[in-house]
Image (cartoon, rainbow, N blue to C red):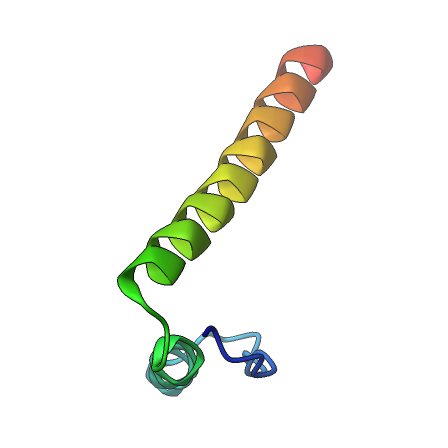
Amino acid sequence: MINNIPKPNISPAFTVEDIHMIREWNYARLRDATVDERLADNKRRAAAAQARIEQKRRTKRILV
């Protein structure tokens, strides 16, 4: 089961402490997840990231 833990607040300067907070959040979120749940979560997040990249590429082509 993937835990529903709120995302940490990241500082505008993005410090080493922020990286530690993200790692701790991700560990706590996935601590009780099965391998299949982790894979499904990774695929879902990768698809969302890919969609954002494609959207930015389309926007860039329109602006150029």
